[in-house]
Amino acid sequence: MAKKKKSFKKLITSLLFLVTIIIAVYAGGKLAFKTGYDFMGKAPVSNDASIVEVEIPEGSSTEKIAKILKEKGLIKSVTHFRIMSKLSEYDGKYQHGTFLLAKNMDQDTIMQELMKKTANKDTIRITIPEGYTIKQIGEKLEKEGVVTAEEFIEAANSTDYNYAFIQQIPNREIKLQGYLFPNTYEIYKTATAKQIVDLLLSEFDKVFNEEYKAKAKELGMSVDEIVTMASIIEREVKSEKERNKVAGVIYNRLNIGMKLEMCSTVIYALDKPRDFSKDKLLYSDLEVDSPYNTYLYAGLPKGPIANPGKASLEAALYPEKHDYLFFVLVNEQTGEHEFNKTLEGHNAAKNRN
Figure 1 (cartoon, rainbow, N blue to C red):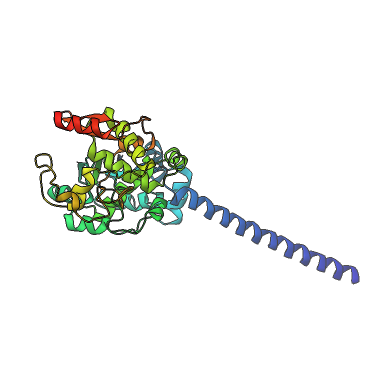
Figure 2: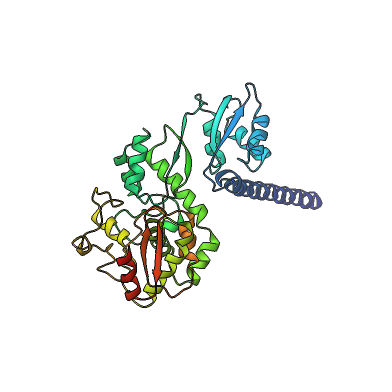
């Protein structure tokens, strides 16, 4: 009898141990799957905001749809897409037709898009020129009939966007000025102002990579200081070959505590509807009391005066080394400048032109 009791206890103990193992394996598997989902489902394949056209044939199975998405570089795994479709009860709910999907969409967003009955999306291709301010971008979007300038400026005044670089921007009005990256974008006609701002910010996040961040640190500059300098270069320079040279002038002046005296910063500070390509700055304009007026205040202005492109960012990061402290426009058509090391030489160049 004692032996039977012992055997029964042993059996119960073994069963309990087995159940504990099964629970542990289940919990571990669940955790592993959740971790895999977080990695493969929530994280987009790329930070690239460009649009991909995807054609889903009528009657396509979830597996076939997954293979099409994988070929287009929009998802990481066909198997994971199929499993999540089944668990989320999306099987059989995906629509056929032409979809326009962004490469930086996560898998769940893609699934939601594929279930929408209006598969065909009307888009508009918009080019945001280098050196545009947030106000100018808003006006362009309004002219194209996408969103109003007021809606765009309001969205650009918000900092409710998930990008690490936003945290390092100092407090100021129009905080995102300088970070809405100029490029050509394919935008849904139904896009909101906030979605458009997010699209432009994501492009900046992609362009200002780890190499750029490391170079800024090497120069003893913050990302915001580099963007601010690049915005000045963008507005001061027309000739591509002069960007790095003008950057060198800015660094030279900063290094000796000399005021930058850049007309572009005064124009931004004035914020007046004047055609500065035709009208010259007046001496009274140079006296406007603004943290953006580099004729009054030494150092870089309070923040960027425009949204610079990649070439100007690179000029700010890789300035030409020289001894020039001055430059003056000598050819209005080409935007060519004459550079000088002394005030005497600079004044002589101004008198000649």
